[in-house]
Structures are given as C-alpha cells and as structure tokens.
Length: 329
Image (cartoon, rainbow, N blue to C red; front, side):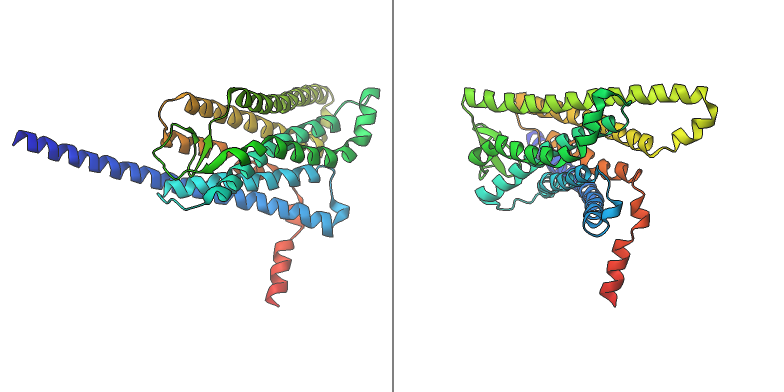
C-alpha cells in the first residue's frame, strides 16, 4: 500500500510539474507576443515614415534617414524571424518548416542582427562627426559623410550575407527534437557539426566583425560624451546660452544615440553570455533559450520608441490619417 501511495504521489507531482511548466511556457509566449508585436509595429511605423519622407517629402529628408531606415527595417525583420519561432514554440506548436524554411528563418535573423549592429555603429559615428569640433581633420569627413552612408550600408549587407551563407549549407529541419547530440539544436532546426578549422574560421570572422563595430560604437560614444561634457561646462560659464544649448537638435539627437548605444551594448553582451553558456552546457535548457530570445529582442523593441523621442515629423506628417480618409472616400 505504501509503495502504491508513493507511486500515485509521484505521478500526481509529475502531472503538476508538467502543468506548471506548460503554464510558464504559455505566459512566456504571451509576453513574447506582446514584445514582438509592439516592437514590430514601432519599427514599421518609423520605416513607413522614412519611406514616405524619401518619396513624397524630399525637402524634409535628413542625412541620417538612410541609416535609420535600414536600422528599423533590420529591427523589424529581426523581431519577426527571431520572435515568431520562439512564440510558436512557447505555445507548444511544431510547424513543419522543412529545410528551406529553417534556412530562411535562421539566415535572415542572423543577417538582420548583423545589420542592426552595423547601422547602430554607423549612426553613432555619423552623430559624432556631426557634433565634432570644427577643424581641418574633420572638414573632409563632414563634407563627404552623407555620400558615404549608402555605399557603406550596401557593403555591410553584402558582407553579412556572405559571412552567414554557411548557415544555408549547415541548417536542416530538426525532425527529432530529442536528438541534441549531433550539432546545435534550435526550436525547429539543427545545425550540423562543423569541422574544427571551419568552425574556427567562421567564429573568428563573426567575432572580429562584431568587436570591430562595437569598438567603433564605444569610441564614438566616448567622443560624444566628451564633447557634451565640454559644451556643458562652457554653457555653465555663459548662463545666457544654457537654454539654447539644451534645446539644440544636435544635442537632443546625441543623447538619443548614446541611449541607443548603451542599450545595444548591454543587451548584446547579455545575449552573447547566455548563448555561450548554453553552448557549453551539456543539456539543452529551453527555459533559458526563451529568456535569451526575450533579451535578444529587447533592443529591436526599444529602439524605435527611443528614436521617436527625437522624431518631430511624426506629429507633422499625418500620412496614416490622410491615407485612411482617401480609402474611406
């Protein structure tokens, strides 16, 4: 009788544990849905604004609009291709993507994540050059940086697509979710094991690219902080210019970019640490995978709303309302 009671108790406890795990996964899926939907809507709104300004209102176009358009596009695609698989997995669904679908999802996510890093770095460099102290060494760069933006972004797309082309060759659909021994396993896909020299070359290339852009981001941010501190000291001495310095569009934009850089570095480092920890672990922890997915989607979600603080054209241009009135009539 005692043994039977123990068995029944263990069975009931196991059932409660499964129910509790399912409840946590469902709640996490709802949280991811809210995060992905909010971030995708914010990025889509800003991207539509930049496209509308570019095609319909060229007189209101700003030099940095090209960078921000690529940034919001990359963020929206990152949220879509990173968030949706996590949401689907959290609700216990297992759609059949096939090899082609898995390659497309993972490849697009990796490329757009790289573009997000590059455009954030480029935006911080552009803002540092904009507020730079006038001098001979900045004259050429200030005069030509606007013409260098589009070629540099195009080059980054090409380089990122070439670097992550290995994913197309290595990723296949994971038809056996219990098999985690033959390579890196994701939600619905599996990456086959690299040879040692291939893995070393790929990881080194990605690491060098990321560290290079992060270093540029950090250096430009330190320079901007130095310029702002120096300007603040001068403004304190000249009290009549305090109000004008605070309302300067360049300084408001600089504060926004510094906020973006700090957010990106924090979430990037946290995501990288959790990813490395997962790869070093022996067992696959799907709860930690969900947390990592949430953290990796935080920057693309926050980014458009931080940019909106410095975007006055949203209030001026009622293109959504005008389109709606046209459709109604």
